[in-house]
Length: 95
Image 1 (cartoon, rainbow, N blue to C red):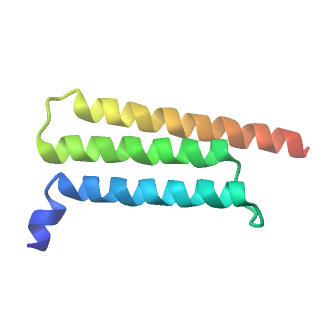
Image 2: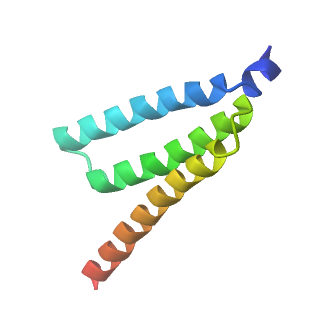
């Protein structure tokens, strides 16, 4: 049973649901204030990177046509590059 879950595309679906809940909680906490959380742009760029990896995983496990995995990885790359840009900009502002 566990093997079927882990090797099916539904595992990626489940993680996407958890990711969506995590993002919603972080955004709510961010707007609520009181906690020192990263900027909204950082939360979203990291979420996009994670979502891209999950899309690629789901495509691979579902046996989707070949563009599915590269598209997911490209989405993830875009999220990672956005995060990197934000971090570099924050580092420059600290100097």
